[in-house]
Every structure is written in C-alpha cells, then in structure tokens.
Image (cartoon, rainbow, N blue to C red; front, top):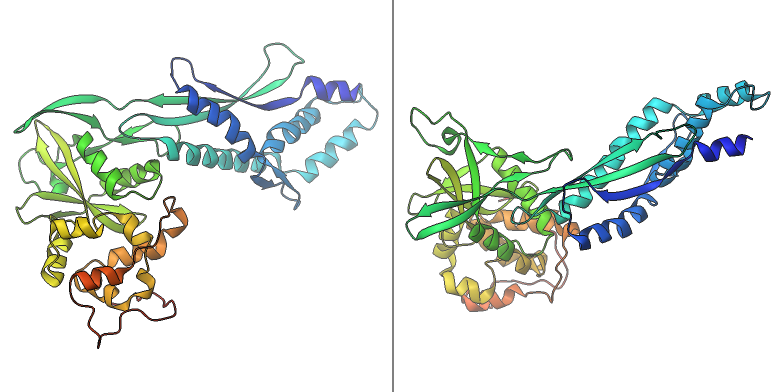
Length: 378
C-alpha cells in the first residue's frame, strides 16, 4: 500500500516544452531536451544536515517524492509511520535544500540559454514549475517552460541612408529580458535633457563586427558581456572626437563600441577591437610600431583569436610592445579567459610580427626556450 502511495504521489522527470505563444526554434528545443537532462544528472546537491549527495535530477524526482510521502503517510498506512516521518524530517532540512536546489537549477538554465541567446536573433529564458495534479492522488510534474523574444527592430535615418537597428537587452535574471536605457549625461553629453534615459539600439553592422573580432568565444557570452559593459559605461573618444564606450570581456578591456545620439535614441554604430586604428590604444600602437590598418589586417592582430591562439606567453618583446601601447589588456585577456576559448587554431608566432615591423634584432632577445609567466607590471 505504501509503495502504491509513493507511485501515486511521485514527482515525474523533467518535461521540457515551449511556453504558450513562444515559438522556440525546433532545433534548439530538440537540443534542450537532449542535453539538459544529462546536465541535471551530473549536477549534485548535498542534502544537509547530512553529507549525502544526490543529482539535481534525483532531487526533483526521488527526494521530492519522499517529501510527498512524509506529508501524506499516517497510521492508516502502517503503524510506524510517525517514527518514519520524524526520522526523515531529521535527516533533511526540507526548506533549505529546496531553496538551494531551486537556485542551482536556475543557474543551470541561465547558463544554458546564455550560450544560445543573441541580440540579433532571439533571447531565451526558462521557468521551472512544479505542477500539482488536478485530482488526488496523482503524479506531480516537473515542467521547464522555454521562452524567447526577438528584440524590437526600428529603422534609423543616417547620413548614409536608413538602417535597421535592434533594441539592446539581455536576460540576466532568467525571468524576462531587461531592455537597456542610458542617460546621455552618463556618456558625457551636457544638455537640459541629459538626465533623461534614452533607449539603446545596436546596428547589425556593430553585431557583425563584434562577431568577427571577438571570434573565439560563444556569441551568447560575448553579447552578455556587451550588455554588462553598457550598464555602467566607461567612455573615451577617437581621433575625430567621436564617442566610444569601452567593451569589457569579464573585466578585461577588449575594444570599444562607437555610439551616437540619433533621433532621440542612443545608437551603437560599430565595434572596434582594441588594436583598431580608431581606438586610443590602436593609435599608440601605430606610433610605436608603424603598423597601419592593412598591416594589422595582414597579421590578423585585429581580432582576438590571433592573440588567444599564439605564443604571447613566450614572447617578452611583444609583451613589452603591447604594454608600451596601453594594450596590456590583451595580455590580461590571454591570461584570464583561456578556459572559455572555443576556437582553437594553429598557434600564431609573434616573431612573424616582430620581423614584419623590423624590431626582431639579433641583440634583442625575443623568444626564450621555456614558457615564461606573463608579466603583470607595467
């Protein structure tokens, strides 16, 4: 009889589905159904106050079923039911574990959708619901509903013609998107209306340049870092006094977004990698090395993958050149973000760049046989 009760009040495995009126691309829904259950079978949680560990999948099925049993069994089911309930309640801090498991599941879903979200296409999020039965006794369902939204698109009139732009937003709390607005005063503008927040939009051109130049990480992670960079913007200016907003990748500068105030909105026009000729660092690098725009393109030092797949850690002379050009951030990116790297190619040798700019002189040591630790001091 008790086994029958457990069966009737059981929590079922996760059911993954599109939320009503949300058109999840079929391939992504298939991937979610195939990959997510395996992740949940690996993620573990400790059932305090004990040290016993179970997977999230087992917690939401087996452990929650035990919770249901504790609630419903009584002396009518078997004589020792009170002792069983007391023992189970003593072993498991029900409220604390439920809160912890909910947060851990939230992180898994949040991280999963970060990889696939894209400001130029769709932003994703999911909500987990424990669905009680409509009649009792009956099984209790674990449902993960997937949501998506396509950022608003507007047409902006510019000197070169009308161009489409998408609203900048991100799902950073796994509930629903946050759409970004920035006060012009935070970007250095001074006017009676500078304290009024304006919506932020990004041109497709800027998203394309971002993908081309920050080209060795998941696009969703790159877009997430773009959103976070804009929350508290750090500003600079190019040689033509045009506004630049620093793009920070996990705390390391990687370039700039060029922005304008246009037709009552803030428009993100393009993305400049930190070595680009339009950035303060790019100008200093040109002064120190003589490398112009086409030279950088030839050497491929206008995109991040070249640095991440290189012998930068072995080349002291190149490290010095970048530090002298205020490009130490490239060394920091190399040091700090390698675990996230998804694009791995044949290593670029910076001796090629040294030869190209004619600074690889015989009396100047460049490469050392052993790998050296990247220098952190200027």
